Amino acid sequence: MEDKLSFIVNGEKYTFGGNGSDRIPDTETLRETLHGRIPGIDLKKNCNRGICGNCTVLLDGRAVEACMILSASCQGAEIVTWEGLSDHEHRLYEIFRDSDYFNRHAAYISIRALVMVCIAQFRKKEEPSERDLMNALAGNYGSCLDIEKVMGLVRQYRDLEHAGCAEPETEGKDEII
Image 1 (cartoon, rainbow, N blue to C red):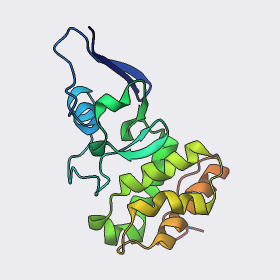
Image 2 (image 1 turned 30 degrees about the horizontal axis):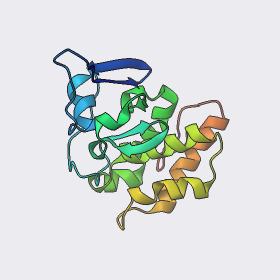
Image 3 (image 1 turned 90 degrees about the vertical axis):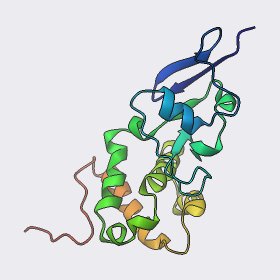
């Protein structure tokens, strides 16, 4: 009996198992599979408990922590990692990274996780409501994160989408006249 596991990662199909030695154990997490078996995927292993968000991926359009998902449960799934985001989607990260707020709080927050959660919402609905975004982000911020500041940065990204992807203006930078 063949015991194959196949899924699509960033648009490319991968198959493991069968009669070969590349069978994925039932206990292997998606983070372990993506990081260890697929070249060019850089998923960090930090907490390995689904708390830090550094291994967040899109699994069939939902943002999930890859360390909490067994690879065996991903048969036929479509997975998008950080490396699979478009240049435009990476602009949200640039906006977060360059903001004064995240420069002061970056040690406590996985910006990548916040970006992946927001991108999942933008891919699901062209115009997600602020309520949709805040509900999606609810599991990704604690008492150290000011959700209004985050939403301000998300609004800035949304404005860029409507303006045709111009270069992001970052908080705290002077405008040249």
